[in-house]
Amino acid sequence: MLRLRPHHILDIVRNIGHGRKMEPHPFGHDVHGITQKIIADVDQPLLLVVGADDICLPCSKLNADQMCVDVLLQCDDKPSKQEYNDALDVRVLNFLNLKEGTQLTVREYLNVVHAKLDGIEKVCTHPKEDENYRLEGLTMGLEKLGITR
Ligand code: SF4
Image (cartoon, rainbow, N blue to C red; front, side, top):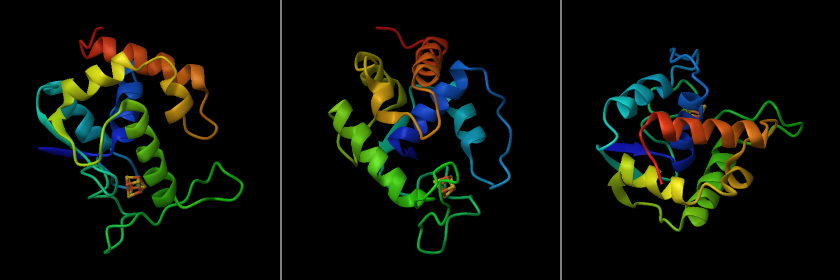
């Protein structure tokens, strides 16, 4: 079963939508590997977590306590990525009417995302990311994954 942060899945769908390359990242995290797994099988089981997930596990920024030590460099005050991500995932779950610890398939999760697409960019767009770019990527990514209303 995949263990993933809700917003990490949205990041992946946006990447797929925009046709971004799936390459290993210098941090060592597994966005590229999880992306390939999702493309290969959207019907696989998924556990929604708020905390370090399967993408974070191999990342050099994850410490021994399973906490992210990275910061958001694009913000002047350089907030903790752990705190930013936790708050973002709680916001995304609330927006989607889902709870932390929910088990479902990737497709079922993306079906919920698709049904709530209107306005989702207001909830999940990252600092310095364009909201329209985010929504466009999500829309095209869902289409590429065969998720339709
Ligand atoms: S949230 Fe932190 S630990 Fe997880 S992949 Fe991103 S930088 Fe790495």
